[in-house]
Length: 475
Image 1: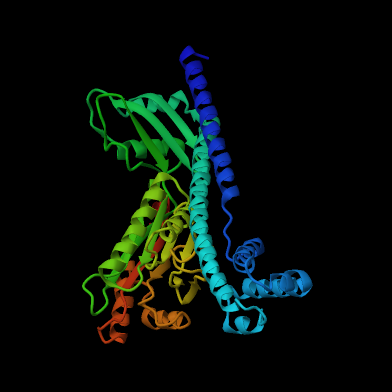
Image 2: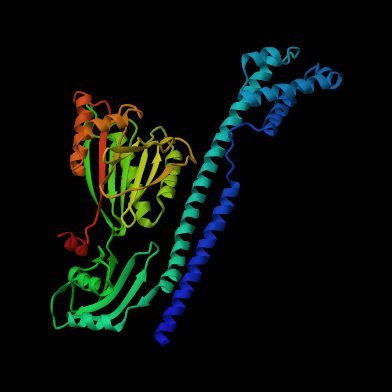
């Protein structure tokens, strides 16, 4: 092994060790914070006992009947206190019935119940603020857990990538040289999903202009797989050595369409959406419907979409990103605005589609005359901390369509399929944009072009890629 290879190997191992240590620290810190987060929704008995002791000491100490109540009739008084506190703990407060029923013999009963009500109010306020603090702790713990996962995954990938990467034969380097590409280093990498990736350090030979698309075609013939340049690679192989990455072309491609309209009395739609294309092997559809309409709802849903984009681009998993955003919305000082989150991830290598929903309207899969709906059973983001999102996974095939809608498009969840079937009957050859336009137009007609809510339609069509060899055989 060359000295440079030994140094590189040692640096890589040191980096893996450090990253693994950081990930472990994040996990321990998350666990420590989670131990302190205890969300309470009911008054605890020891709190009520302490409150009654405080009130009774204040009122009974100077009362002439103190001995009668707490010495002569101690068992009766203690039983009455226990019964009263049980009722308060169950109901969460003191009712008029409780005031009439308990401590009828007490001369200070009205003042005592007033003091107890004030004390209960203070206890509930304290519990509310403790819960808010614990919710913040839980949100931070969740963020640390996700950061630990990302760092740990990166450390693991360093090791896995090194074990699954190998140099290509010198014969390929010679063949590239004959095509005016001088290769300095040529490595093949098998990614986690089984797809191929080739890393090439090269420059052109004799000043000949060679595009990365031409280089991808040459490498495809040499390795027997269809390769394409990665999006962030240069378009032309230049005179100086540079790094170029080629990945295996996906089995599917996605074509999208969008149609939207604002509520009749609003100039701004409260819905926002986005399409993401991470590394070219996925298409992520994002849709958020803000509560109500207008600028306030638009700002809310826009903020959610922007946060989703940032989290996903940083490497967070979709479900974890949705949970973190929900925590952020719940912990705001003004938490009167809620918004839905609807995420659809299309994997172009396998055709598998993941659906994640938080209070969102139904999503539909269209395959010829067959249709399936995916519904959400959870609350919108910002209502409750710890609300999990609905997650479902479906296998899609060539020619399938995914239709995402905001709730203004469909009248009632049960009538969605019938409404879409009536619109899309005979529209098998329509492209995604035409389908989106058809759905929006029918919804607008139903509302007599005065929509009562914002309407957004996102359509993605999944189509099998036609390989060069396959096209030749079909001809």
